[in-house]
Length: 220
Image 1 (cartoon, rainbow, N blue to C red):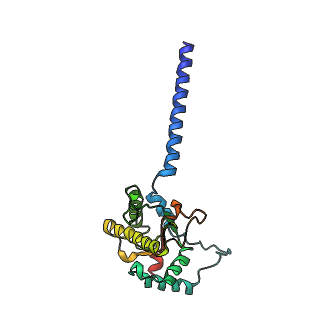
Image 2 (cartoon, rainbow, N blue to C red):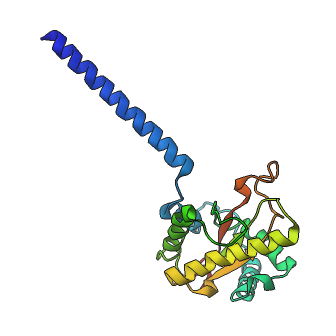
Image 3 (spheres, rainbow, N blue to C red):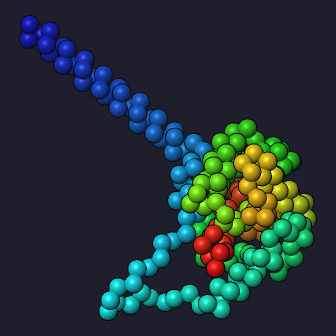
């Protein structure tokens, strides 16, 4: 009886170990290859909570009202603009403002030499559509910025990055009913590599989404 019990315990231990190994492998695969989720996008693009006012304690430096007004005027200026109509100066100003705003990089792949979204990247684009129509984000103004790797000429990559940003916007407008005026598209070609040490790396072929003006700020 004890031998049977021992074999049973051993079998149970081996079974548990096998399940644990499978779960561990599955989790690693999910981290490495899964598309980004709606919740991840929501957290990344949510505006930071206002600092609470407490008696006798400083709340730190406050935003300069003049700068906030200037940024707001600039955002209104670039809304409803065609991607290719943005000047180099305007593209750089968007990049400067974006550094201080909630943003997320999405590794969205496109078919070779085209602006067609690849099938494997569609779940990430759909998660983006759901996130931007969530009540917490709906009504804000977002920048959709396209980037390429360093292969090819500057003019070619600039055009390709703009077409890819436009493709994401078109999908979000058509499939999720997001107002086109709430999506500002811009292309940077190969001028702003995420990983300059590896100019051909996939990490450089990305779409960045920035919450450039949340709905509360826009309504003021």
